[in-house]
Structure formats: C-alpha cells, structure tokens
Length: 240
View (cartoon, helix red, strand yellow):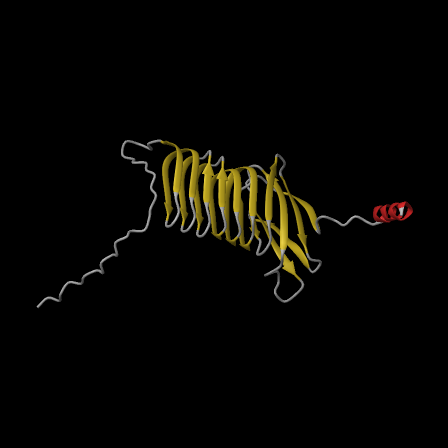
C-alpha cells in the first residue's frame, strides 16, 4: 500500500503542469490610452501597476483567441473564435493589469467585473453579473441583474442596478444611485450632491453634504412609489 501511494505521487509529479491562462501577453501603451474590453461572457479582474504596459491574461477554449488592437489611443480587446459566430458567445475569463491612470471601459452580457486600485475613470455595463470597483474617478457602473459596490471613488459617480443592492463607501463628489428592487447603502459619503432612488428597497446614508455654491441645494432622496394613482391628463375641449 505504501509503495503504491509513493508511485502515485511520483507519477503525479511527473505530469506536465497545465497552463493557467491560454493567453498571456503584455502590450506597451502610450500615456492617455483607454482600455476598451468587449467581454460577452466571462469574469473580468482588473488590477493596476505603475508601468506603461497592459498585461493580458485570459482563460478560454482552444478555438478562441483574444483580438488586440491598439489604435487612436484605445486598446481594444475582444474574443475571436474560429466558428462562424466570430467570438460572440465565447466564454473568456480575463485577468488584466493596467496602468493606474488608464481609463477603463468594459461591456459584457454576463460578467462579474472587479477593478482594483485605479485612479482613472471607469465605465462598466453588464446585463448579468456584479460589479466591484475600488478607487477611480467619474464612475459609471450599470448592471441589470447584479450587485454594485464602489469604494474610494472621486468625482461624479453613477451606480445603477435593477434587481440587486447597491453600496458606496468613502466616496467624495457627486453621487447618483438607483435600483428598483434592491437596497442602497451609502457609508462615509462626502457629497456635493447625493441622489438615492429605490422602488421597493431601503436607503441608508452616513456622511456629509456640502454646498456647491450660494444657489445650490444638495439633497439626499429616497424615492418610493406613490400609493395614489396618477390621474390621466385631461384634454381641453375644442374651441366652439
């Protein structure tokens, strides 16, 4: 029994290690380049570093590849497939490392997206999946079916979900948060203007509101459905 166990260990050690990523490449980008990622189905993790380079690591099938196009100060990544669908529907999981100052634009049909440590604008739009962003300026995070979490953002921050909770913490600037059937949690918010709207959830707020000027009126609003039906508009009778 001991001999068999040792033999099994030796055999396992002799096996070649499977590559974690099918794609692993690094692209040097000029300052001011924006990342545009069209990820139809799959998860996306974006980390940052202080290098003028983007490292692209991706897990996908052997019939797919990652199209990389750098032009007009935009680095575009999109899955390509050998079948007739082109790349539409291809499952790809990304792990990207980008410069801290690189603007990020991600779109997906079904993707959990996590962005860590950025100091740049971030835009994420997905149908199915959660979104988590740490850092960043001028965020626009939108999902139909997924949670949203933003922490440490600056500037204008827009967070919109349909069916899940939305949370923001340590945000400084103007904040707009919307959800239909989820709760809204705002913690340590320092806002010139804060709007929070939910239909069937609750809103919790902890922070400070600061005026933008002598005519500004900062506010925090939780909008709930009115119990009173709206009266139809009445048309004026035609002139006699």
